[in-house]
Amino acid sequence: MQDNCSFYIQPSDISADERLFYCSLGSGNCNITPDGKFQLCNMLVAPEMMFDLRQGSLRQAWEEFAPAIRNLPLEASAQDLTCRYCRLINLCMWCPATAYLETGDFNGVVDYYCRMATLRAKALQKATPDSNE
Ligand code: SF4
Image 1 (cartoon, rainbow, N blue to C red):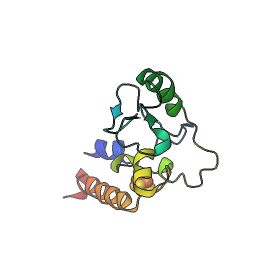
Image 2 (tube, rainbow, N blue to C red):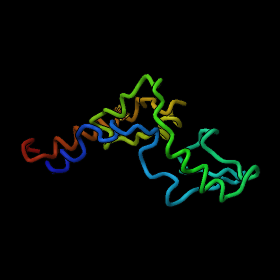
Image 3 (cartoon, protein in one colour):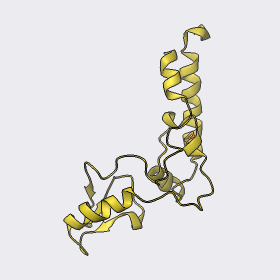
């Protein structure tokens, strides 16, 4: 369990990534919404991150739009990069897409994610052999 703690509670390894999205979204699968919008991930609902298949082809969406979104840089003007440096990031559900869903900001901190992650960290630490629990 101690190994698990050190695995889950550690500095974020995404802080050095200069892209907005650091996962593999849109590289192995995609979604198409009932109204014909191509999504790289079902959590990514920002209008500018979806491709309207009534305006272009699926090939365009997959071969041009998806790589362009995957390679979007992290905006230099982003003020709050708290989550990218957070040592609890592996214990919450934060990613730029979920941050946008919850806050309207791709870099937004989600208060209830913080509370859940803190409780999970405490539970993991409590479960270590040193805690006598
Ligand atoms: S939402 Fe809170 S716990 Fe999650 S990565 Fe951001 S600051 Fe850390």
